[in-house]
Length: 436
Image 1 (tube, rainbow, N blue to C red):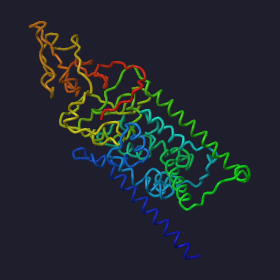
Image 2 (cartoon, rainbow, N blue to C red):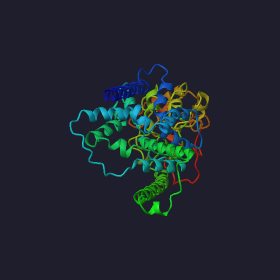
Image 3 (cartoon, helix red, strand yellow):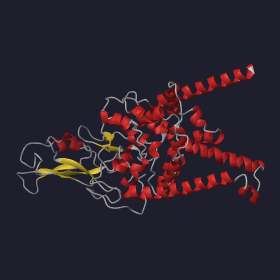
Image 4 (cartoon, one colour):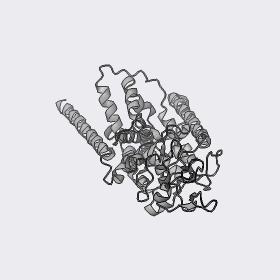
């Protein structure tokens, strides 16, 4: 008896040590740190470890990249150990358990609540087949990374707002202990489904599965059969909801399309592929990437570009190296410079040069030599002219334009499929496309 008790104590201590070590590793991987060093490798690892993100990304972009290999260890852990990641390595689960342990009353009033985690997983997978994984942003590792990245310096309220998913989960845990992990988390649901598949394979190999005759299916096992039928019906409805939701989200456009980082997926896919982890904003040296709080609802809090104070530098492609889901393609510096973010457009009624005043700021700063002085219309009233074949929408001209409140030089979005300027975008496209 004493020996059994001692083994249990050692097992709990060993598990606690493993969990806190995994938590420390997750914080070390996700902490923003200094913006002067090369943080790309560390930033991409934490959210890319999730098999849920890897599955949604692979189904959406129709390819399996090198980042998918990072999710393989957790996939194998979930396959071989029941809820292995949740029990030993999930940083969100450790925070929730620590918070729950501080409470004296731990009643679980949600015991009768349906398990929607498998439905979220299935809806995301079926939506990913159409190019728009619906709930990829609910991945706990992505939420944890977003919270850490929210504290990058200088701290801004909009960045902190992008990381509020983790505090929301902790509030849910405070009032309904265990609800997220047991009923909602799609990554946890995927682990349980993997473990059930593992048990099924083991039984098949060992020959323990026998034909269930009429007396089994209609007798003592009737409750299990009814439960299986209910789950199958629920999963089928979730798959249908994923298809409908993906079609609606791909066709839900706002009045304008925001500027996305270079190499971003098409606007129909971007909102679903992006997990809102904040990696791209974390590594951007220009601080021009911010969560989109005014765009369409299906891409809410996804990254957008703001050229108010700086521009997308020609010697930087950090954001292309840290996206874990394929929302932003992995591009070399040469490939990134050829990707069109948008096109610069001039408002001659606001431009100082066009109004006869001295100014050539946009001509001077353009790194791609895409802006020149045009005096063909009137030699006494020259104005800037944008070479659309050279302009990639880096925003240098907009960031230095001195006119206020509206800037004379503005970068407008373009349709990344046709290259046409897109003030508004059309309806849902049947063809699925990804820049990469």
